[in-house]
Length: 239
Image (cartoon, rainbow, N blue to C red):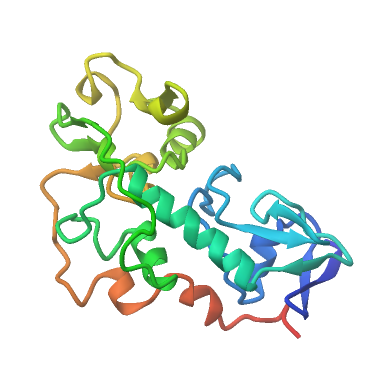
């Protein structure tokens, strides 16, 4: 495979042809924030958290192919503020109750908020009226916490091959839906489905297993989000 090189924040990065900018940055130990991206799913480019400046133009790092000679800006005050505003909007557009959420400590939205120093959103809360689907004996779907990242949609379609999840509505009325009008109980979704494991927030949760890891030992208690990439020992691509 052909080796290429480009620049991120003034640092030369070596990568393999065919990688995206996000994947190449990960391999080089450079963390670019993301929410809708997952290593086991095809890139989607919906959340815009991974937007960087490539040769001066804003592009999503998860969908843009790495190539020779790119000049990329990732760590700038402007991009930091844009990403922080995106996080702020995700919090005020839903009904997030992190203190009591059983996904707390494992939630990527919460972990990114800590990384960006968000203690409370700067925009007013919208308090949307949303519902919970608790019809399935082993799974619940809490629409209050959904950020429309489509990870579950792609995983159910491409990995589980079940097509359980999709979106209905448009604009502020857009929401996650399942393949039965009777709710999750009338679908073939399973607690072992990839769709559940890739949810970055507390929308898709397994019943009967909540709060199994004590505070202080949860994933992001021990390791701030992105630190696994930044401390990656195989930094062969970074110079």
